[in-house]
Length: 174
Image (cartoon, rainbow, N blue to C red; front, side):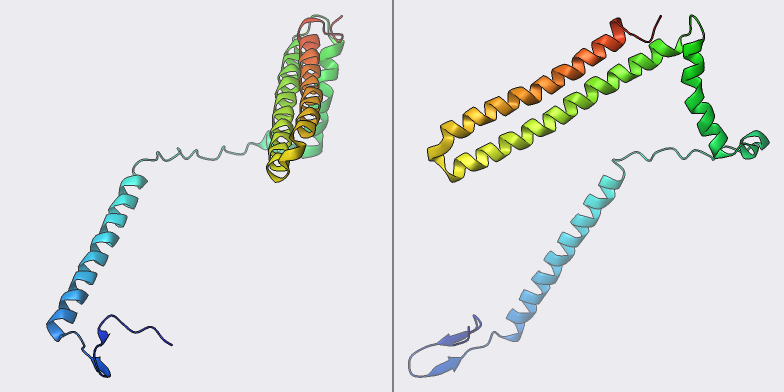
């Protein structure tokens, strides 16, 4: 009921064990050791050559701390960052509002495209899974998928409209 090694042969009347001779065993062990060393050295060379492939990022020295940055608490810096756009809006001819509008337009179209792309990918994948499980309902699933893809794409178009309004018809600029 157990598997016998290749050197145990059954022949004729009863089991007859023929073990490999010492020179055969020594030759097999030597060949195995040589092949193992060759594979290990090839792997080491491969890893060593790949380590030279990547460029190490430069290490920047930390900026020296000045007395001004140590004296201002974080809350004051946060308040200044929140008040700056309001002050820029109060000033006539300010460049802050168009610049921040361009940043907002970029975020609007970027997030809309990423969200819609991920949603469409997930919906399409689930539809393909459903069709592969039940091919007889493929037409129904395809119709629902196309309708949901249209709604997802409309959200991307809304993001585009918001971006275009921020760039060309900005209500914040007087």
